[in-house]
Image 1 (cartoon, helix red, strand yellow):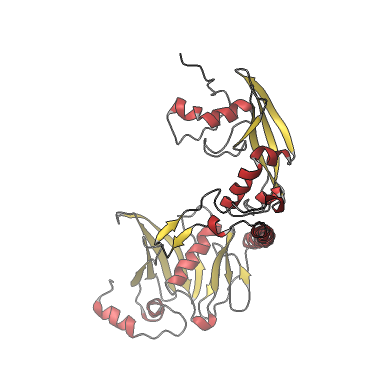
Image 2: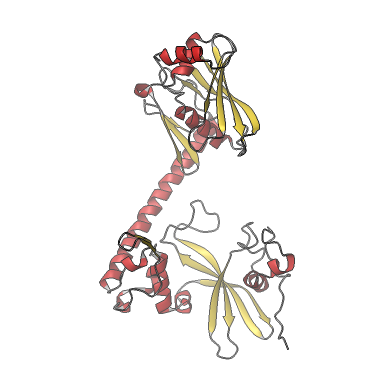
Length: 379
């Protein structure tokens, strides 16, 4: 049965007792078998239609229809059902990962008002790696396919699944670790800013943003605001503490990348002489105060991370020049990783030889070094 004017009037006159969505509750209480109500997804979910169909006197099925950008129907799923006012989360085939799919489905149904009235309502949020749902009795957990929620009381109607408990614990531990790292990073950044200002540096010039006076976007520039700075009051290792990239660049411009890298621990992972030029590939241990890395990093520890640098020895002056290159073995795009930690692989990446040979900027093949093309002198 379609949503005719008479049906809409009856639903609009209904005053719900348990749920925010009066139309779905009306369907549960007064709808006929095979009668349906449907809703379009909210902002961010506009291409999804949610359909509630009365299967029998006790059950209302929940289905979704997903539309493409051109508004053609793409697919449809049976995602759950309501039985005796118990919301049963079944599945959502759009999501290969059940941890995200079940949580997103609960969130979108809440946005449609398929949840208890405010007195008994629950909350849901995404935290680090999983959705977290909290009922009004203080119980918190990660949603899962098979979960049942009582739409009258707002409480969990079945036992928390062991995999859900595991996912929740991991997400909470990640959140705890990340909050601690944020605290340390903020503390170190604040101290570095204080030293920079006391030394006479201008930190405001390093900030971009909209200028209300000029009605133009302000772009920070390296080297601006350092005219009166006393560099003896700015430690070299503050370059690892500042979160602002312009301030870090100002410190690098003053001390030089060579001098900064010379203070760090490093290991030579490869060396080679090519066309009379000597190269070394260094694996440098870089202090981590800026909170730039993700947690549970398998390569790095909690207070430092590794970075590859290609050292080039100038044959005329003997000076060393350093250039950062991607780490090896990250299985990323060809422009973002090396297949092997070798000098030739680093040179291949630096010279973009993979793109020159294949012509494919979307290639996923990371350079191994065999693709390196030695430069020749044009006559």
